[in-house]
Image 1 (cartoon, protein in one colour):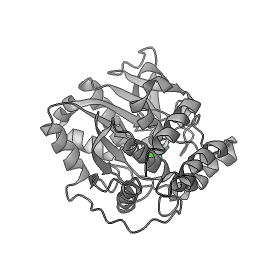
Image 2: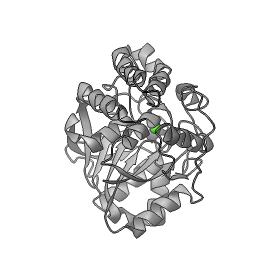
Image 3: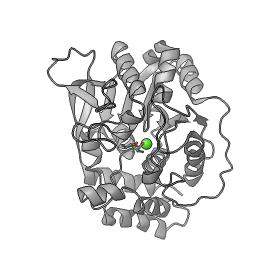
Image 4: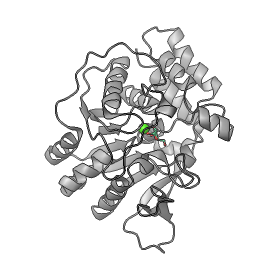
Length: 316
Ligand code: RIB
Ligand code: CA
């Protein structure tokens, strides 16, 4: 499966990238980074560190947009730590960043490919929206877009909006609208599902056990990053550990049967100051929105962690 991953590493993005690297059925054509959890320089540098942690210094990382299309930038360093990786320190990465801008890579690679590409988005959609505005016809080369974003229930930045869609609501709306126009299949995995993928102490211990037999295995580092993640959700929602948002996107690519979905039409609220970034879904066509998306509604959490642990055990 030819795949481009757009991300803002970010602790959960890091775990998603490692899961993708550990899955030979995914042919990672490129990783584009975007400002989101932390600045573009930090997300890009973190992508280098994580690729080296996964022993994939051959992967190509293309830094993208440093700020949202319209909104003023926000970051989530209070969630992911100042370094964006839970304060875990990594050796200075040696692999290069690509000179081509992430938006140019998305646009040019999609214009040039003959076979359609799957796009996994793990952060704000600024890069993807910008590429689609520059060359909407690239949508015809998208096999599908699988994205982490939104919430049917409460958001995690405001009561209405989830971080990826809140940070750049205009980009999210452009992507959903253009995908509908070009009939690109879209799968959205919202907080309601990722909040069921909790990295409990037992699940983190299972990851740590992978490293006890193999010093090169990155699972111990993953578990340590997770120890410092999702503390607010644990405090306010009583979770037994951090929710693993972004790895759900990669797991969907690998084993879609782990998820339940429903077909709905959807858009993003961009005008209201109160609910900007809200994923607005319509189950019965009353809003007359173009297109349909597959909205994930449930996950087999044990199956997800079985997949994640098995895959990460292959690394190192
Ligand atoms: O709301 C969760 C999402 O926002 C995840 O992708 C996390 O990495 C942050 O980007
Ligand atoms: Ca992310």
